[in-house]
Image (cartoon, rainbow, N blue to C red; front, side, top):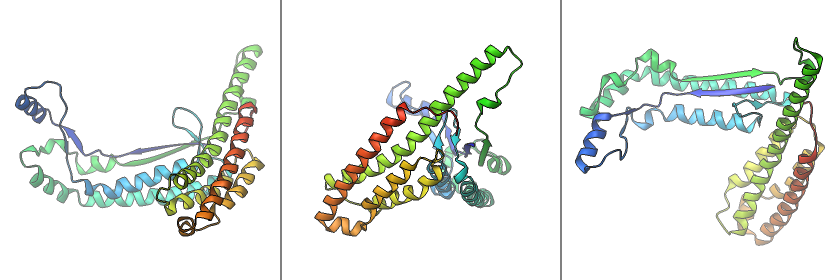
Length: 281
């Protein structure tokens, strides 16, 4: 299954040509910049923007890259969890938008006082239009199956097109599979860097890897047993609490050793993936 997520929001910013011209005249410069007004105070949109950010993070964490048009691969094993959680997040987004809508008249009154002469009523959409400017759109569609690819053309051309589709799908599947390995590499490498650089070791370093270990099986659409092996190796990295990592040199040394071995193991898998052929999910 392929899924596309589009989040629309009102930017609440407006280019002010008059102010831009006045600044250029004051400093005797030309084409030096653009003055964009903040139509409402930032905190008025904070709730909407934060939940939109959470939706994007959840979407990317629970899907894999597919094409350059925004579609991402949603493995069947993660479909129910994805739809359940995205529905909850979508409802929270709509609630935040509704609160903004309900308060819109007061927000405009505050903007008039704050912006003074810069306040231009025409810069602001109506309540209904501003409500429509915020939206979450999720579209799903099946992955194209070369076996079902039939056109009313000569068999030779049909077979050629089917082969091209198989090759494109193979590359996309390979990219999706590799991206899961890459997530592990990035998370583990960051842990190693923080320890070796003697930087602040935050709880999120361990927690993020634990979260990935929980999500990875749902994203393992090609049922690769090596994902399970990676997770087993990661257990030796996350078995200590962040506090113990910060306080114990021997524990940090052990984690670096285990992490380095795991990174080498993942690197070998990624090398194999580059030579592996995928035709179907």
